[in-house]
Amino acid sequence: MIHHVWGLLTHPGREWQQISGENETVSHLYGSHVLLMALIPVICSFIGTTMVGWHFDSLTGVEERIQVAPATAVLLAIVFYALMLGAVWLMGNVIHWLARRYPSRPDLNRCVIFAGYMATPMFLSGVVALYPLVWLCLLAGIIGLCYTAYLLYAGMPSFLGIDHHEGLRASSAALAIGILVLEALLAITVLLWGYGASFV
View (tube, helix red, strand yellow):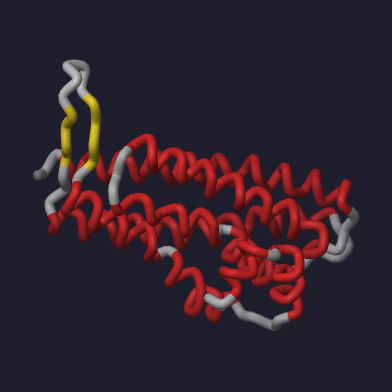
């Protein structure tokens, strides 16, 4: 639930234990957490790209500002939102696949729930898109990714019921695949918003 956000940011070990003790369903996770959290980068990107615009420094030293037309931005925001929701489901499947070698392998639903909560810092980092400076968005994305990695390393051992050494290996594999998924998502997003900017 949305109340887990503060706990994941301040005391993730205890919060992961609380989350694992709940019998939450994927539909409840999406309805009470993922659908709401994924709106943060979507709404902020919409506002930032339509009202403020992307800021770029040209070779001549003059700052350029590129805005996206509101009608185009709505369509792009819908695609961006769907991609993020799909990425959470995909990462849940990746974690489920990685857990196949452990005797206490959780079911797919629990893996998707784990992935949904794990993505919380990435969703929150989308706030900076309100003022879309490229370097600021990149910095926020790196910070969000680092904290997501920390949540993964903190939660994976207890989630899979394995020791910390095995948890480190499983977390590293999940993180590597997650970074690939994130890079693909970012590439698609940049292409979409850049494509939208050309229609202003």
